Image (cartoon, rainbow, N blue to C red; front, side, top):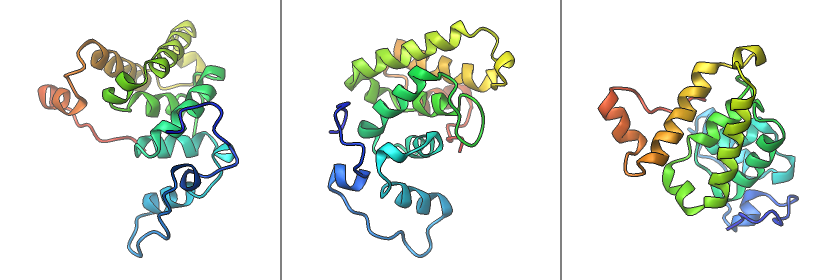
Length: 165
């Protein structure tokens, strides 16, 4: 649903998915409130930070991934509110089953990684090379062994799998 580049960008996620959430719960965190708000924003009006937040929450990935990849095609180190490349990191954190179901988007993400590699030293671009390369390595590791989920890998390596906001 919504993976077509022809999706009407004047529509909101609620309209595209025909799923209206209403108001957030009274005790909602700021992040939850933000997700509720963003679901009511036209997708064509979403900025890089909006895409980053929603993708890290794995919200409406089928609709938003093509938009995020288009942005990354133009600027591989597109940044939201945290650092250059934070949108790429959010995209690459999407679990492997999504990429297996969307091989065209997987190829696009791999092409963006190639563009990042072509940039050379990420320090020269004021981007956190360790964070970005770690996520690229995780993405590639999942490609080579799709059974090895992030949670399983974290268990094996003793690392946390919590998303960076």
